Image (cartoon, rainbow, N blue to C red; front, side, top):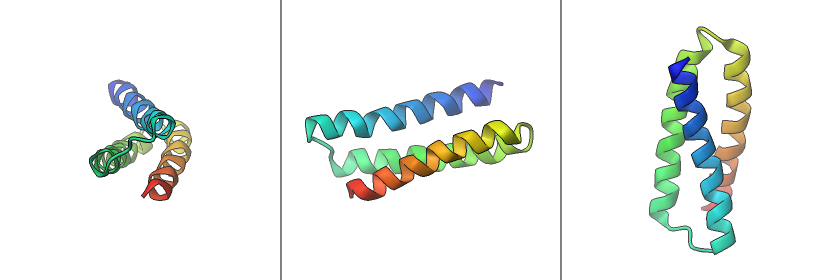
Amino acid sequence: MFRTVILAAVTAFAIGLPAQAAAQQAMTQDDLLRLQDNIYQAERELTVLGTSDTARAAQFRLSLDELRDEVTYSR
């Protein structure tokens, strides 16, 4: 359960940052690298979550895939 909360927080932060940065037009290379690091960390957490709650892991994976696409587009 605790890992799910952490994963949700990381995902929410990572999804909110590109939207906020796009509105401000101030995304830096450091922001993109930080997002990529958060995506990598979330992927590791999803692997662990997938062993206990596959349905929830699948939902988070869809969001994470969308986030990865946004980061790629932002580069």
